[in-house]
Amino acid sequence: MAPFSPLQLFDPATWTYTYVIFDEVSREAIMIDPVDSQLARDLSVLKQYGLRLKYVMETHAHADHITSAGALIEHTGAIAATPMYCNVLPAAIQLKDGDVLEFGTEKIEALHTSGHTAGSMSFVWRNHVFTGDTLLIGGCGRTDFQSGSAEALYDSITLILFQLPDDTIVWPAHDYKGQTQSSVGYEKQHNPRLNNEHGERRSKASFVALMNALHLPKPHLIDQAVPANLMLGVRHDAGANDTMIYAIQPSAGYAGDISAELAHQWMLSGNAVLVDIRTDAERAWVGFVPDALGIEWKTWPSMALNPNFDAELTAAVPAGASVMLLCRSGVRSIAAAKQAQSLGYTAYNILEGFEGDPDGEAHRGQKGGWRLRGLPWRQN
Ligand SMILES: N[C@@H](CCC(=O)N[C@@H](CS)C(=O)NCC(=O)O)C(=O)O
Ligand SMILES: [Fe+2]
Image (cartoon, rainbow, N blue to C red; front, side):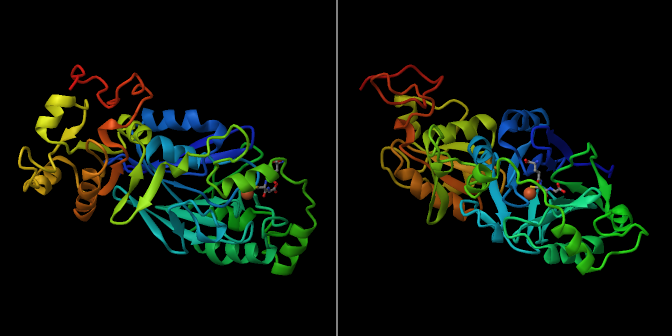
């Protein structure tokens, strides 16, 4: 297979690199360290490459910019994966050392590389390592705030990252000089934080002394960025949209309840398949949802369970996909979501069902905003 590289995206205001990697066949993607002000760019990159964002990952709780992870979840249905010891509580996946995430047939492994912060991680994919602020090109992350430790950083770099093969490509979270990538072999030989002027490896004591003498000014956004990043970038200051990540309410037996708006967005972005489980008779009478897959949960008029539900769903939707179940009011769809989840799907229940308001158009005196381009409304 031809070698391929991560997409490297740059935020010039904070000198931050965001990375996108994806499986070429399934188009499932992950994004590492996205920046809030670049949300529109990042969404358009996903669209341009035809990608479905599966995971949004953070190497640490950043001090110098605010993540767009929460907003990306809202827009794409991605799942947040953050290092466990960074205490980003709303993230659905709390990564431990050695955890592996899969996207398509690709795999990425989390390595706990503490030092810049206690929870910091690096991520290894093929012969690439995303080092966050643990190892920078010709440098390393500072260790003077946010539970930083120069001793831990020395061990993480020399005992973990420098043990990767020399030809592993190094992709840092920041570069302040316009450099884009390096390799483990090059950094082992030439990184001046780890090697003295004679090219010899510094002792841990010498490294610690060097780090303690840096006296860098504090990142100017630190006081806003850290609390925001502990909430995946969802701010609680005036004007911020507090409801964002709470649009998914976890629930027992299925992936969770989602609002009509979120379901509509996921449908448009192709992140989940909308399954309309109302009876054929209800759909014909009340209105269809364009582009939805119609699979009855109960049959009319007996309202007995449809014995072919499982077969019809598995025939129409690929295994492992995300599905969103819609009924009239959001009750039947709970049972259907549990059933879909048990069949191996990531299944969501759409709150309020067909009576909900996916696009702000349902307030016109009658419910049924889901009938977006459907049949004419029938009074009854
Ligand atoms: N001037 C930047 C500060 C940049 C900064 O401190 N970056 C951190 C990463 S969050 C670092 O470790 N820098 C390493 C260095 O400058 O050597 C700002 O105000 O945001
Ligand atoms: Fe950092």
